[in-house]
Image 1 (tube, rainbow, N blue to C red):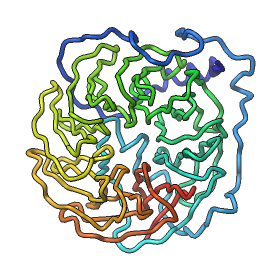
Image 2 (tube, rainbow, N blue to C red; image 1 turned 60 degrees about the vertical axis):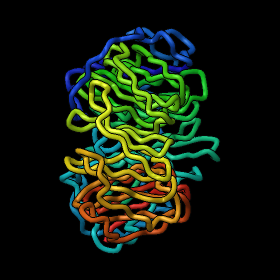
Image 3 (cartoon, helix red, strand yellow; image 1 turned 180 degrees about the vertical axis):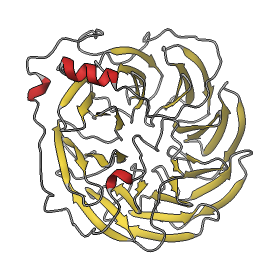
Length: 436
């Protein structure tokens, strides 16, 4: 196992500058039935400690594959636009650790769009969701057909590469940006913390297996992440130590939620899990089908599952309402104060009332499944579909505003909306910046 640690100066600077990115919600009550880390299905090659020893190759010498200028595949058609530092921040999957997928201050395109710029990587697919923080766009690359992966920091205005980092396996989930570090995992069971200024490795953890990681939630010094091997992991954000793992009985494919001291995660074992930030299991809810995603807002959880259901559960584990449609709800839903937006494998995007689950509208334009999470900004719902197109519909009515065709499916990548653009990846291996 290779693990790297930052210099003492970097470590102390990070501690002194610590701040929390995620928006906290409210916690839950319940009886703990499992002790921390007692049933993990994958264990690291070495036992972690709170202060891991430095590797033979110090982090200071780690060299990312820098590309100071845009690659040949980046089209620089953007001109006079706001400075990127003023763009709305999406530092983690679906904007915050509660996975709202809603940003009330973001601005996006309302009329027909074209590609302001595109970026292609060495990998054949871009399945990861981009994130945006401090004027920089971060994106991982790689898919099922790729032997390796990469991670990139880009200028969101021009598409210019600030730095790139090659990794041994695809990066298929979003990163989380916190206190100058980018946290993300790869499909070969390696989890990274990179310095956002140059892409050098701050620390890394190798599970010694081929587990794939979800996007993480980073809160204080905790990094909470699910994996296809079934555990929920908590790492120390500053030294990379594994604090605990809570096993489920199925693959975790959707990013966990963190709200007020509790981690909520969905599993292919059909359960929604509530785990305290100390690793104690609080409660589980049987959803009747493989659970595909969860979002939290105002003490309510909204959960999608493979048995065609969207379920609202409160933070104590009691079901409020449940609706069923003809096809499976396939990804994390987006939630505003009034509405829940969720797509199905059959190619329909729905809007439901938060309070009672009543259907408000549906959009059937996609000719392929809506298996990626939608987001909401500027009165508009933006989502990609397996027909290769990105759609923008009015959040109030579901009326189609525009669509844009990429060259392959959009299977798992949610968009980011900021600075009048939509940023989204496609399985054609391209990251698109779409603007009016």
